[in-house]
Length: 264
Image (cartoon, rainbow, N blue to C red; front, side, top):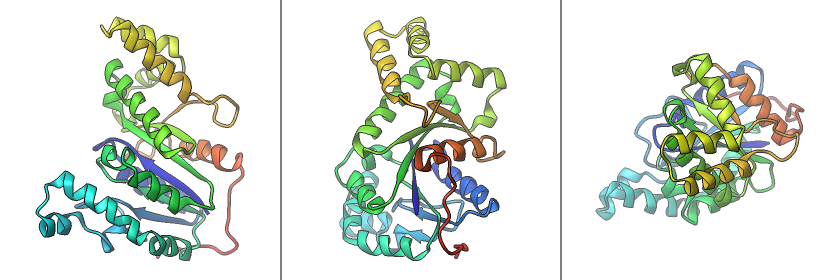
């Protein structure tokens, strides 16, 4: 059982990627379990096999304890720790080849507090796992926004402590030449530095962003590129994303459990 943890800023398309990637994997005869780990989700585009809202619902927490939306989400995430063992049992009962974990939309409240990384560590314990950090094409097209996303990606990698792949979502909004330009910047720290300085960023901050990118770039042949472009709408890049996930998790070898795991 392999775990794929989808993380990214609000609005980056995490839930839609879980939906599209899960469907793609099932089409290719891979057993998938989708886990919604967002207690504040009002709607998600897929039917989760495991839904944390069955245990903790942020809206109910908000009403019961008279909290604001962010306070209710923080409290709800803290409450998740009481149900980790049961959630883990539910996941293992699916006997899925892959477990896609859809994390809360407000990733800062999840990944940067102690509870979020603890929940992830407990869920993936005993299995191989990879984080897919996503940010959308609009952010990637602007050097300064791109730099801020890289800082978030670096912080998330430090907090979760798991191998990480960067994916740019909503690639259907980009022209091929735009993707090529972004890819060149994201695979060349010096190119990123030059783009940021040209955009008016302080050279010191530009250098820090370039060094963050350098740290995010893989140091070996496991994942030969730091980024993947994907579109949950068109399906673009899902096979490429799966390939790099496989490289990280299993050296390219597909994983099958002893029994097929049909979706519930």
